[in-house]
Length: 170
Image 1 (cartoon, one colour):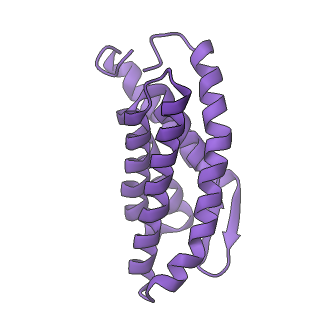
Image 2: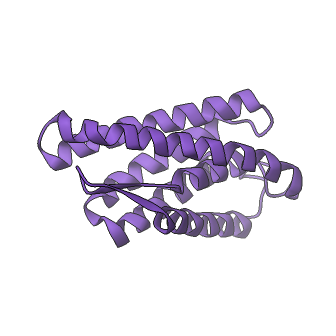
């Protein structure tokens, strides 16, 4: 069922619940990257789940807002960049996935992950002001985070699609 076919209150509830889940999953497990002060987290799995299950709007808003709130709590300088980067990641992933095809789910994950890795590379190079080297140090961690997101997010989404009522999923 598309976002237009679901009641507004249900859509708002899904956004609130998944934004909260993204925040919590981002904050609960953090692996520090000492070279830049950033961290690796499992929030991308939750963004991917929200995007694959509920589509681009819910995936984008939940991913952007949930991740930005986590950054406000733990690393505020990146919150505005995170809002945009993770929002686009969730939106693109939800847009590409059709809710049925495993191939489209993989393509959605790869596309969203590429946006996240590239987006943070650009943002970190800009914020740190030291050129591309410190930002390049974060790339392997961001790739690891993206791979973890896909390993957890895709299978869980596929299982949840068969368990959730059709009014919820896109």
